[in-house]
Length: 382
Image (cartoon, rainbow, N blue to C red; front, side):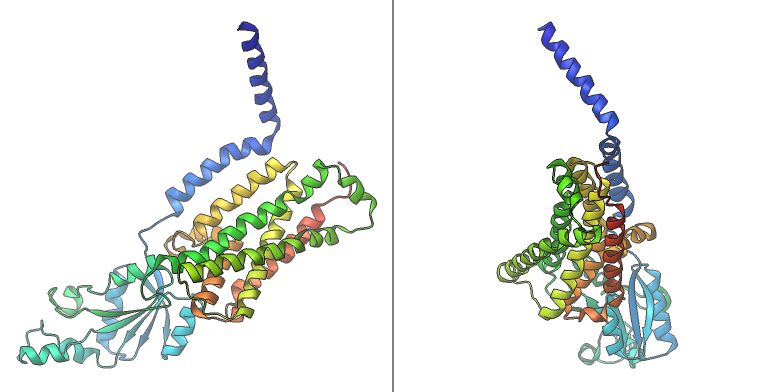
């Protein structure tokens, strides 16, 4: 028993020394729980505030301006855009520049006066027929949490600024949900899940591409060939593009048939945004592969990228509910841009060319990733 314990002790110290020499693994042991703690404790916020919204003020009166100020005071929404025409505001909502539109009608003053709780001398039956909500919210319902937050303003009391009694029988705002009027979670989750699965599989496939060649002894053969680093990088990622497209077909197909998720966008737009994201994820995996020294390190770095992609991209928690620092980090992740693109194409039938910011970002990320991976790859055994 004493001899066996000595052997166990020897292996124990050997593993500690090996872990000490493997700085990458030791760093992941510290960084993964630290990153998760920071993300969940600081960046993740289900109490959504300052949702970017637009206003179409058809009244242009003091009352309409006071109404806007009163809504802003709730801090649930933040008016970032003002439009004179509804169709321009709807295009901004399609591009996810704003998440809702407040439409104030021309007769907002008359609507307020006709409210049965104001105490005018009109008969009760007449008041019930003519009373209408003061304004209307048109909401991007593709994100159920944001839709619920804005729906909470439906019966918002207007006691102080508008001298409106709190027992107003008619809702203050009419709320209309676009893209997901039933607020079904599957409509929001399935397109987002596509981004997470592609992130995990595409990065995982290519993150071990270079180190696997070294571990299997194939690097010697590659060194003797005239292939250039950029050609090797391209050859590594092209086969996995077809695998990614197969995954897209499976997820969206089953999502449509099993969960009745609508696919409103055209196949060309869907193909375009998917190819861009697959290419960006594959090049990120190649960069990881040139940094890692073995396949274990490659898997660890893949997990390190996957966790923020799940938590910060808008898949689980609304992007608008995060602090600015977390939003800046999220903007560096390809998954964040793909979430906007795929939900815009699948749910809103937006042409991917109308979301040029996210498209350009993925293109630039792919090109930079290929260049970095090619520069880091050396055709030698060191």
